Image (cartoon, rainbow, N blue to C red; front, side, top):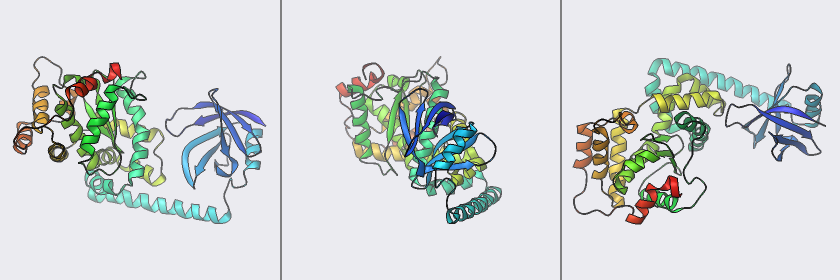
Length: 365
């Protein structure tokens, strides 16, 4: 039996057309005319047995993958229900699910009470380190696409995303030379976005994005490395996770309890935090301290970060740079960076050839 349905991939709140074919072992799906892939009947669960359309989702190891299929065809929905033995779960599974619902409800009440008694900022500080790194990575993946679209439109291009050109190799070299001296909670994912906005920012789950214009503005590799090490400090301190909990408040906490990182709520929360919220001066100072330690151990020029920040902050006749807006620059901050810089000659983290390649990463790959 076959028919049409609406498919959600769990990454974006976008309805897509699905062609559904019920075969012996599972559901064959073709999305927007693409190649068919399979859902095993044993992994399919029914979310709502009420009025049409019926919503089915797929699980892996008992966990909701985020993928949802909405079927408005009564005959197709009935045929699918008849082929899925575990569709509604056993009596024991339903009992466990009810207990989970009760537990989630109690947790939501506790979360709301915590907001009332401690305040969202304090709560965010306490909760961020407790969020599993795998959960933070999933949230970062969910918000990344929307954030990039908000900044650069649908034509946003990640430079050298799939390639291994000289620019990408130079970027990987810089990342590797810094990461070996940094205590991070997980793997780092550094991208360069082909954008004229002069900025760099961090998303949850170790995702760091540099804008092409910021790299082009730098006068040497250690200026870029200093900014990268600073963003790594935000990763190490889980500042992006902390900021999103702060920005999302109760709605994010409930979403965390329900495991919902893939809907519109997560995207709105992530975009709101990145585009509207700023790190506190304390967060920035801690990230600077982290950058100083990492740059010192890597043998780079610590003062390059202070010099770069001072130069972009005092550019006459230019629009206020996004880097300055999101990383407020003060004389005290630059003085603190320079005061901790080690004396003596330092070796740039990239040689001249690597630096030229990095500057051209969006044109040469």
